[in-house]
Image (tube, rainbow, N blue to C red; front, side):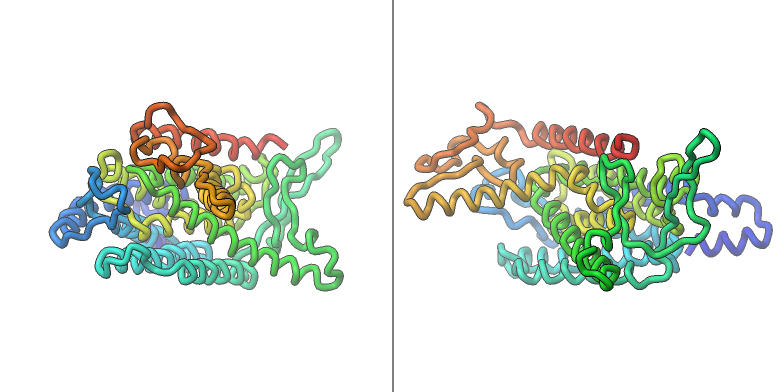
Length: 418
């Protein structure tokens, strides 16, 4: 809204109105507004939740700990802190901004419904897994198909040109619709999904877009659920996601800046600057939320926040055509997902033999490091014994942040290491 106001004022010669034409200024303003909204609004919302006794539904083994009575559904703070600066500073006719706002609202409603059932209906299971997956798949289809058909979702391919003895990278003059994605550590850096579907012959282009839509569905579903699993300790997910957000903001900026895109030999995305604005608001909302969510937490984000955060990360990566990089960037989410899958499979395998066995002390993975010995099943054998003394959850959280920082650095290094 303010973007259009200052655009009008700029044409009228209003002093200072040109500032809103700079992506850097809008992005920094977005992060400041998001921080103010999350810290200011968060305090009022926490008081309201306490008054209404909207508290976390704890698992049986957690009922006697310090988390009992802490308000939940704090993801509403994050969502509002993202949407307000984006609506004020973003270009609302931009397909990328529209998709990101739709994704935030879509997953926010899904998470809110899940938390509502858990909190008010006293149903610990919340929304059934099938409904969650269906909603995530639906969003993936919307994102994939919109990028497939929208005339705004285009790129200018980077091509190498030999000028005498010097090889330079330039971008094609005209933007074209391509279903390319970035491959890390590969010299040419990009691959077209249509090339993967070469075996489809004359229909390889259509098959390539179908594969892109399928990948979009898988990425959004996997990252959203991975974030949901990672949300188990005070400040854990908010900190990890903020680090991932900074990485995605850098990728968005260089992808939407023609000079940086040429220098780094990556695809240039016209209109991608709106992803930068959104991502900065995303970072500000998460850091502001840590004001209340760091140990000891005064509020939990609940599924309202975790499902939304993971989905947003997945959608941003898809919009930037960097979805494969999420395997590296979201390494913590991958580990959390795998730990649960492996634990269940290993336990079922032992159950068939009449043996109680587990790989980890408890899953998702972060709980493996802080569960107390007296809470373990004495009749069960554990492959990975874990630390001799349970770690405090604040230590586990910070160590997971450090791992995510390393993964983020490696992700950015792929821009140069090929």
